[in-house]
Length: 154
Image (cartoon, rainbow, N blue to C red):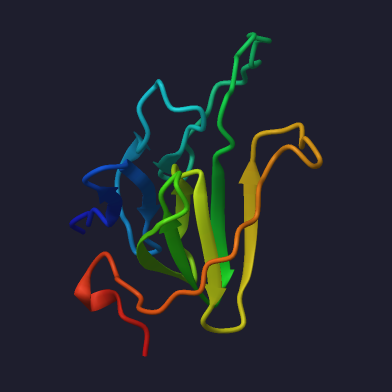
């Protein structure tokens, strides 16, 4: 069976990498990191045949300084629109994630709209700094600009 890469990087000319999506139908072999070693949050796709042994290991305590909160969303069920904004709170573009997709948000400014009843998991670094972790802002989207034309929701 041929493996199919379904990893999408959402980019913006001025703001760089906004997100990385591993689509539900992605297929690969072995361990495939989709983030560089410098990224504050690591994300990998792994595929192991039955019987593969993963050697027991301990993650050593290493002091790390993290300046940005990175989120990973795992869409358990449903459909979500992810809206990306610049640091200046200006709308940039949107993408859609569906059941089984995993998205690593690299942009600090984003919003969401549930396009269907949606269940998801959110994973981010801790500890949570109540009152300091995020700043909410109002933005009324007039027109959605999708990363890819085929992504429009219907």
